[in-house]
Image (cartoon, rainbow, N blue to C red; front, side, top):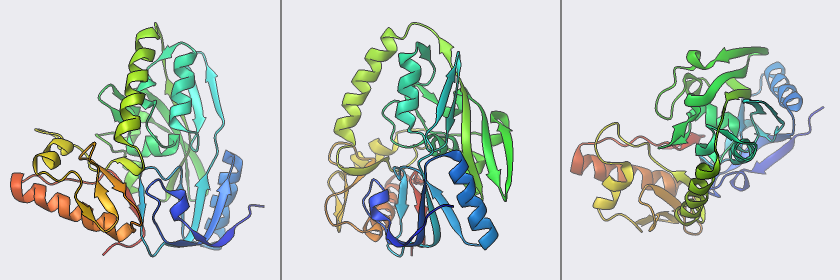
Length: 287
C-alpha cells in the first residue's frame, strides 16, 4: 500500500523553489508503485497529477487540491541498440549511460534536467536532436488501462506531443532506438555543452522559459534585444547569463514568475509582434 503525506509544501519538489501545498503527496519508486498510486486515485476519485524532477514546472502559490504523485521510478534496461527506461528515470543518466556503452542518438539529452516521462510528453531536445528522433514507443496508463503507443501516434512537434494536452494519460516507460558508432567526438561535445549549461542554468531555474518562435530570432535574442537581462519582479529575475532563463533570485513566489512571464512576453509582442509561448508547464491556478 502506498504511503501518502498530508498538506505537503511543493516548493522543494521544483527547481524554481516555489509553489504552495498539496492536499496529499505520494512518492513512488517503481512502475508498480506508480500504477498502485494511479489506481488508488482513480478508485477514490481523487484529482491527481504526476510530476518528475520538477525541472520544467511552475506550481502556483495556492498549490494543488488533490494527490501529487512524485515519480521516482528509475529502472532502465539497455539491450543492444535499444534502451527501455521507466518514466521517473533521470534523462541525463539514461543518455550518459547510452553514450558510455558506445551508442549514439541520445547524447542531446545529457545536461537537460528532467525525467524520461517529461521528456516524452514535451518532446525535449536541443539543436542536435529531440526525443521524437529516437523514440520507438511509450507505455501509457489511462483510466486503469495500459497501452503501448507508437511514436508515430504521438503527433510530435516542436516541444510537443499530444499527451501534453491529456493530463489523464500518464507515461509509465519509454523505448528508444540508438546507433552504434564512434562516440569520441560526441563525448567532447557533451563536455563543452555541460560546461555551458552549468553557467547558463546556475541557481534555481527551469532552463529555457519560452519556446523559440518558428521563424526569425530565438526567444533569447528577442528578449535580450529589449535589454531585459536582469529585469526583476519580486524575487523572479531574467537571468543575466541567458535572456530566456528565469531565475529565483531569492524569495520569489510563483506569482512573481507568472507576472515576469506576462511582462516579458508583452514587451516582445509590442516591439516585434511575436507571441512567446512558455515551455514551462504550470500546475494550479494562475490569475
